[in-house]
Image (tube, rainbow, N blue to C red):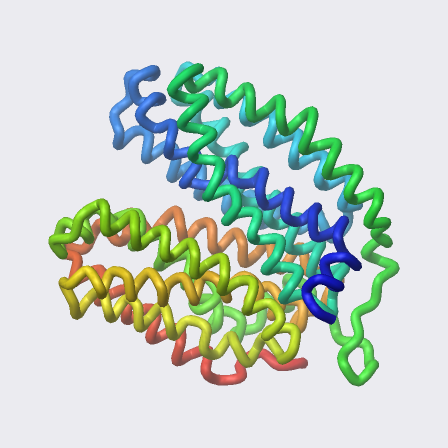
Length: 398
């Protein structure tokens, strides 16, 4: 099935996934951090205190999604989506009215949990479950909601912030989510006409029903823990490097202008790579690509380590963009192919929790190294280890 026919056949569900990911950008670091300066001034905070509150809220949201994310296996998608988006709207309102660290902490927790965590979780889990033959394309298209958000949301946020301030901005986001996004999501689900999870059955290519793993079975299998570093690797490594990007460019003698060019290139490769990777994953087995998808990122980090010329920065951005672009379709299709549909939400929640926690730890961990070369050595070593472990066919049917 070509892309156009695929989109026509699944337009309501694909738009639902895209919109979930898009509105979830309210909880992404790239968006929330735009308001840091305003918060520091309004609440008379130290920068370190704000970072600490944000990191702790992120870590707790990671632990929380482990439990809450599993409920999508037992609750109707419509009900689960309603609870999550209302939680996100309430958190936006709390963030708009935060006047002390306690209010700020709970608003960060709600926005990170419901936005970054659960809205994306709803999108990916639903698409993988209900479009089993084209998971790669479905996930790659829905995750473009993040790319689209990265392109337009900062400009909107900066405009609102300059003209109306922090509080009015976040009240505006809450209103738009409540009167436009929320009803639209429910309408798209109604048009998609999804069957309950318990009435679904997953079949392998030869027509035999596949064995569905429970989360406890996954957690008790030592092979899962061996491949986990490869699964969370892109999020962990990219977060650690990007968080310290100003230190990196200062150490290499690069300028912010070149960094911005590199980030634009990274975004372009991320967008194009995700679109191209989806059909490739659908045409083969995601386990095949799992064995190699970290390689571009490892090579990119080697480029950062060995060279001071600006071309090495651009090479890193291209190679890192290739890995990040492929990670969504490859990893998410891998879950469904290996573990089945029945407990997909619980298993994704396990990995999402680990991933979110790793992104909370990465900035602090990378700051412990005394030089750019040292933290890059650690990052390359991590990538090489994860790549070597994943080369073995560790997870097959029991």
